[in-house]
Amino acid sequence: INGNETISIIDDPIYGMEAGVEYVGDGDGVADTYTIFDWGGVITDYPYISINSTDANDIFRITSPLTVYAGGSSIIYVYNGTFDANGQTVTTPSFYMYGGTFLAKTGTITISSIISMNGGTFTGSTGLINIAGIEFLGGTFIAPSTTMTMTGSTSPIYMNGGTFTHNNGTVVLSEGATNNITVLSGSLSFKNL
Image 1: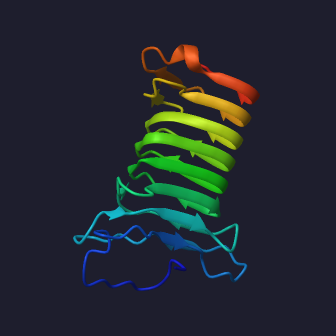
Image 2: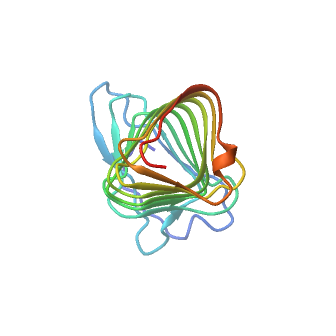
């Protein structure tokens, strides 16, 4: 969908559906800001959501908490454009960055599995980030200036490219995870660990 349509639904599109929603903008070459559709009282989840803007300078913003359905291919993808969490909470099993920008801002971001950084920039701010781990093949991850908690017990950070920037915040690793940080290539720096 472009992001500026009026969407109406009769039934809950989540149950029995593995398809998700891809936001692409209108392709007019002009910077536009779109509001990611809130299903309101019918549902609060997407099976998966993809930001893949035709125009790299388009912004896709949420205005209420976003929960990605925990099942099937439950992932937030960012390929191109900017996904602005706009101070809202975001909850998803997985988050894949291939390009573009994610702006966490002041809301809490909870990712029960991994963030896969392949490109683009994931920008934390003053909101908390709770994740199992980060896999880097490229891109830049800027931690929040507050606290990021990593609950993964096997390899909370695996780097083979990319950049992790501490942003003067604190990274909390679960017990036993500190011995499993793997850096093959890329840049990793902590302020408070």
